[in-house]
Length: 457
Image (cartoon, rainbow, N blue to C red; front, side, top):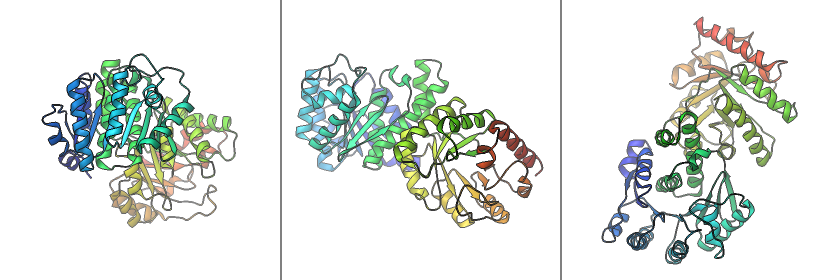
């Protein structure tokens, strides 16, 4: 669904606090939906019934809003509209903690959200904190167990926000990492996240939507922090980043990693050397690692790529991309379908796909791919079986789709001549850089060779 269509069909009713009401409304608008911030008890039921999602935020609570929240909750439940409860301040106020329990006993929630302290307070009557920020040094395992307890009691998705967001439902907890400390340096970012989640649920009321919303928000925070001069410009840039702006990328020199021959320290050193050599996009490809190990390595590689402002693409695994904070994912012909991957990662992150025919290329483009990898041009040593793609097919694909097309397969600085005259956007290299004695020098030579090829067209 395009942004304009969403704006016409998706109304988000937010009963929230005056401290963050403006940012919350702007966040919903940035996502292409329409906000309404009605809170008068005589109109909220009518308005909630027309909405696609309801956000209840307990910040700066008042008698009027408490009455309206109960009325809107019942109206939303009657209409089957997803409701997000943001339990702001439930760790520092007995009034709010008691009101949360009343709401939970009287209605159903799609998501119950709070920071670590607020979630612990909901799950433990004796827990107490000061203010609306979470304590430092909280044991993450206690947060996890509390999430699962609350979720089991309420049948709601439970989200505990922090440096790592923990999202629990049906006996398991998913982690979403990334973000920036600047998100905690300005007022209202947690409230904005509640609105983002409500908007995502309005589009599709699923657990994955909550994961996607958290990953999207952290990614926007990272993007805003990269160019913010301070807290004021950070908030402006955060809203800019949320306006469904695609992460930019340069496909010119696309480096695909292979860690199978190296110990981790040497592997990371080679990745850093390639970055120093000017690679513009990196794909982490790990076919044989466990999920936990894949995520761990992805975080380490992402730390390196972030230093050089180079996007990191994860091969095949959307879950690893979200957990590591990487900028995109690449799916092959036998991996997750492009359309499903796009649905899961949202419109902002980079989505690459493999195509070996014009028909497959057109299908990938129509389903939401941002770039294509086409090959193998030459036999490779990175796969057990290499299926070659002719340069004629490569040329036809570049003419058929309007997105960048990269050649892949056995390419190095000495054999790019076969690609002359074909309008590729860049080249993908594995062994030519990964196995080179000096990855930095290899990347430089390969990039120079491609620039020579491009000038000769």
